[in-house]
Length: 288
Image (cartoon, rainbow, N blue to C red; front, side, top):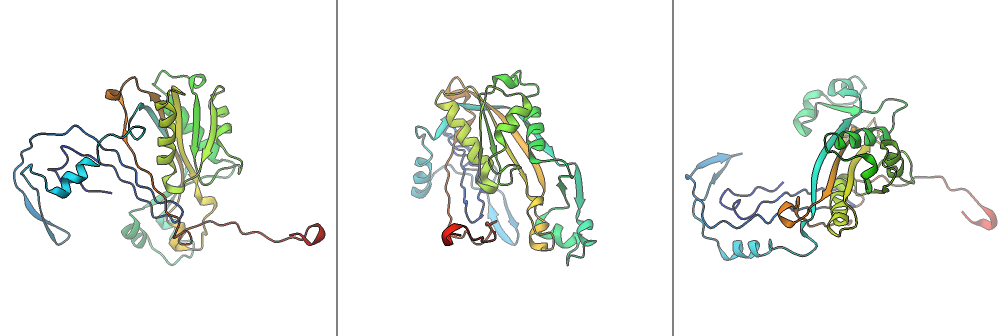
């Protein structure tokens, strides 16, 4: 996350998500609030984690700050996209596994060890007979509740996932499950940052005028893939889904996506990965 000093918040507001997942490094920025001409605040000085800090009360900007502000100027296709979120929903898998259960599995870990390092006290797991499609479709249905938009009015369904039920993609099945019979549907894979990529992708379809209603769903069931004997990995992941309904905005004043910037870095792909591991079989004419 990025911490924005109080004296800067008047002209810039940023949401930064950085995921150091080898194949995907994302920086998503929402910025461009109207510039403020004045700001006053009472001086405060204190300490945080052993370091001194202060809130600046003057409004003068250095050359470096002015340069940073200039970079926040609107850019066609990247700023103030004509997309606005109007509904959201979520669904967590019904089984709950607290940290204490992991202690009983013979792992060299404790509730205290996990909580101190991750802040996690429990995780939700899919039970037998339930799949990712169930989580995603429930979250999507809840996102539509109270919006006045029917499933038949959905133009596009995007499911951001790295752990689909079907290797060919879950989005068409999710669309069918919620009754979005008129929607195009596809999966998008970008690991932890998949929802951000899907949000921007869906917003671009709305910004271009191609569609009016887009469902963006982020869903994963990584408990099916982790090594439950490895305490460094199995403590981190659970199963769940979140969804948001995006609708076309009529003007920039109604824009819900103020700006974005996406980046990827695959140089450290070996640090966190789930590679294919298969068995070689001999085919005809010595082919494998």
